[in-house]
Length: 269
Image (cartoon, rainbow, N blue to C red):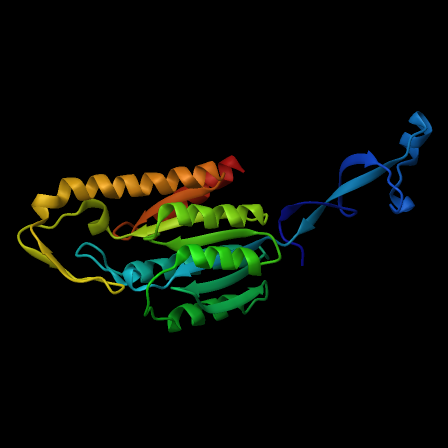
């Protein structure tokens, strides 16, 4: 069943888009005889094709996504799973297709795209059963997805993006070169955004990092500067690639960030 979105690819079905000059080998059935009669030149009529919209949803399943701060009810991974479930429901509800990929250093699980009614249940089952275990290698996964995914669509990356920013942006550009739209949803705990710690604190290392004991008051200013710079470099890299980048705080209701972005997307087309 056709979805609600128009394809960017020209075809010969549904709705007129434009003319182009006839080339040897073109199907003469699509010649515009009225234009031929007026201009004595051969033109082919091209049309927009109604097509299924494909959302390729990628979820970072590395250990850093397990973090859950004092003001959050769920971990970053649980929040990311909720985002993926909501987006899957919305896409499938409008009769379009969803695929799901979970990754850390490599792709761990992949659910092929489908617009079938039971696809949502497959998505939920896959999300529920997944547990993180390794380090992240987001740039590698982005390049791999750009090579693997043949049907163009929107690639939605749900991650904390804790990786080398320049390498991540190269992966984004590869996806863009392959013809995909890209949306980055950066899921962060409020602790990572505000750094509210006091006293003497020992931070537990994830993804093979050592534990680190310090007084947060002595490093808070530097940390916040570095974190904001990290987020801004990612945001700028996405914008240069003509992609959207949204930060989501796990202490905030899901509908705040997700609803705000969807409203913005609808208004801007």
